[in-house]
Length: 406
Ligand SMILES: *Cc1c(COP(=O)(O)O)cnc(C)c1O
Image (cartoon, rainbow, N blue to C red):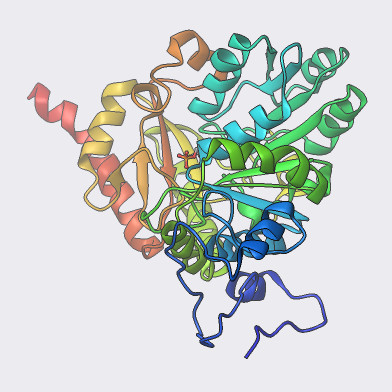
């Protein structure tokens, strides 16, 4: 029984369950886990033909494995991209996307508000190889226009950004980048392919940490890079094949099963995140709430033009700085303290002392991260339980200094 494939376009929920599946000769229902490092050949001639590229046959799991291929097919179908390669982590995906494309003498322009390790690659690693880099404030089109008035090879941006949920105007930046000769790489982790399709706005390459919403259940690390078939075959694939950031077939299988529920998990988490943002905005202890679809988000209109929902993260500032944040986080009875996100469990982070400690106070100030900033990844628990926990922790954090003074 071959895998069924109707001759009509399928919707995202269907693609997440069935996209990319390749049934083996055993007619299994679920995607098979090919936990093998290598493959065998019928004959020496078949081995020769495989290496010559005249016969299609798996060779070695560093650069191809059927379980990994199924995952790549599923993600590409969902994104509407011609090709996908998956990697062992999100950072391996970002690294491969950048290093496969760039060479000494090239210029990179990036938004300042990047995931910490992406920032390190651009600010520290690339200049070591003679690649010039320039950061801009992602929300400021004038800064993009000025940086892209000179030729560039690559633009890297993240929207919404971590942790301040800043939105970058992808269409405008892609137009400027293409005129400067650059390809645009979008880190779409916060939005997921269900809420935002960067390729529709002109992006050339999309990268994901599959560790976040794709697995979404706290089990495995993984990354994905998507782009045109030509770029993936000619630029990315030789780099991945020869440098080996490969995803284990086991982890690929876990993510394949995780994706089957993505279309159920993401809307539920978005609904809860929106309710949590509204609840936090009502609290006197909260100085400001950032949630892309709220009317008080400075870029609500742009967010609504690019995304179909506000996302699963809420960022807010507590009055009373670090002490208030620590009292609040330590008082949480349900929500965990963790630097991860996109998980079925709600997770709270204090960026200034964890994920953004190393960027330094000056850069944090530029990014708008204060000592009172908390990032909340809203999970799949009952939203009333999430809200109850946040409310009691805010009450407790408020009461604590009064008690201490007694
Ligand atoms: C987590 C994350 C990454 C890195 O992914 P890993 O799987 O942790 O290597 C990159 N970009 C963003 C926006 C992330 O949230």
